[in-house]
Image (cartoon, rainbow, N blue to C red; front, side):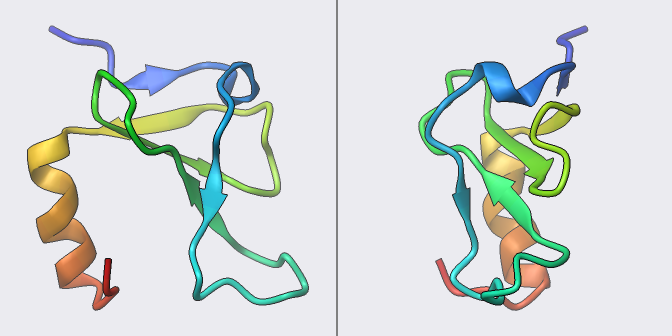
Length: 70
């Protein structure tokens, strides 16, 4: 079984927030593109916290289901 989490997401660089995020930096998710294990996602308020890694083939349907344009 492949580990689908990163315990300290701050060890990775290149995180980006959604263009739908507000300027107040409230409740935002950040994603990391081009990670070899999939698409890591973290809470922007807790950059040293964990990240969950979505399988790449599951990411597009997830984003489509929540109505975000890539």
